[in-house]
Amino acid sequence: MTSVVRNQWYVAAYGREVGRDLFSRTVCGESILFWRTRGGLVTAMSDRCVHRRFPLSEPPSHLDGDTVVCGYHGFTYGADGVCVAVPGQTRIPRTARLKAYPVVEQDSFVWVFIGDPDRAAGTPIPRAPWLDLPGWTAVSGMEPLAARASLLVDNLMDLSHETYLHGGYIGTPEVAETPITTEVDEEAGIVRVSRRMADAACPPFYAKSTGITGRITRWQDIEFTPPCLYRLHSRIAPAGVLPNADGTDPDAFHVEVVYAITPETESSTHDFWAVARDFALDDEAVSDFLRESNRTVVLQDVAALNVLERVLTGEPDGYQELSINIDTGGLAARRMIARLSAAL
Image (cartoon, rainbow, N blue to C red):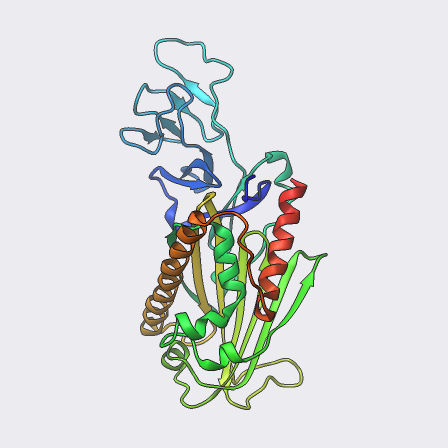
């Protein structure tokens, strides 16, 4: 049985990755070709010529204006995936068309709809506006994960692992020691997990980027929209400094950590990550530090989850998993993803 939820929008790329060069990425087991028309619009279609299945992303395939020419036999396709020319004849077979995918650019991401295209318009795309919003600066990247997407979801929903796996970067003892609260909003389709630390050590990730010295008040408020978009609202301030009664919060630093979790196959994942901040907006040194530090953290997760995938794949059936209080958010996310899968 497949573990991939279909009839959903998934992040396939950052907008900066897609241009006038043919670009391919596998999403949910489907190899998809992306490119921009001369008008700047992103188009998405199957990355396999209908004739002999040659990948259209492979040279000598190329763009000719707003058409794609297959480098094997010259079949040529428009931006809608419909074949407009075949070699050696004027009649174009009716079935000479590529699967076209609904595609939307939003919040710096290129989203593609996997499944029945007629359901795309009625399926909402979750938002991460801080990645492309005035008053915020973001750094971002993507790392390939040789593990199933559900392992990354579990990892991100339980941040207690920061204390142990990411010590020296973002982890401190208080993260593992502080209890969480979990809320499941069935109507909105969101799982929320909150951890509020009133007096915590300031990890290097925040000390070096904000300049705070000494103890901090640290909030971690997770919002996960299954199956694919994770947002961590982080608030960092000197210990004892809280928002004003009217909700304004001028004395704190705010960081939005975003993960787009895109299955490549049943056992591999595209781990898109981004860190947006509302301070030091034009400081390239801070951007460089956060980019490299977060990538290091992501790679630590990748290494651990790749090991876990190999372990799980090699285990016999019937292993009884143990869960505790810190797993409530991850378990709620699993249930919601299972319902989405069953309903499609």
